[in-house]
Length: 259
Image 1: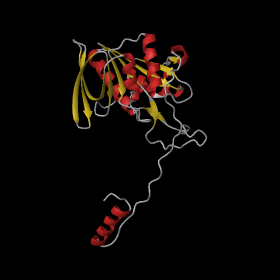
Image 2 (image 1 turned 60 degrees about the vertical axis):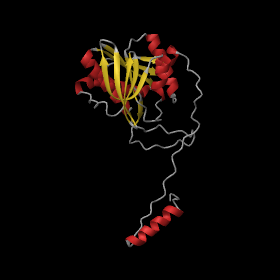
Image 3 (image 1 turned 120 degrees about the horizontal axis):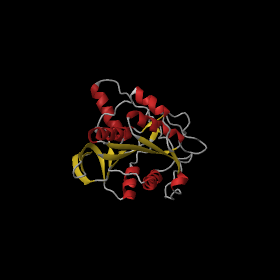
Image 4 (image 1 turned 180 degrees about the vertical axis):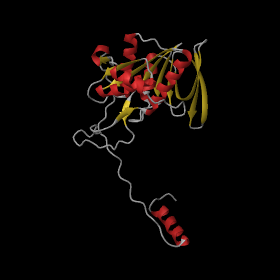
């Protein structure tokens, strides 16, 4: 049996068209469709597969505002046993702060775990800071970018295949351990209608930040956000191939300056 904690984050849909709030110089969060971080779906699915094979319990934890309960409801609908909402203030919490609050919650609730599974990164800020920060606080080993997880229930060990830029790396670790999950690990299931109906009726235990800890003071602050400048319109060269090639070479040398 393995007890597993899955850390879940709610992020803007990848189809969102972002706007900058002129008053705050930050992203305007109004009228945004929020979804479970796609990489966290691989973590949820892997936790459920491990439970189905070995037995145990799966808990999902999410830090954030009231709207993250939607992500936790979806987690329940996928088959997660229990969920917890650490309610953040009505502002952006950085990854280190979220990791610290999750760490404090695990300690204070005395949650037993063999594995903690997270998405490799959140698609909003694209940092990958949260999992490593949490593992460091808990003083447990961590392995990133898993595309295959093999557990040894007798010796309480795990072997992980990680996909890197130059190939596959295979690492082994004792448990407990934190592993980050990425595309290729599995194919996340769709919540069943029955579980969705059950999940809609389940209360989500909510813990206020003040019940866990004071907010730590990390040296992280977003001062300003801005959209990248629009790309210049491309040029279409027409004419005889010989003349087009000459003009293309000239443009690459004189304008693009790549030759």
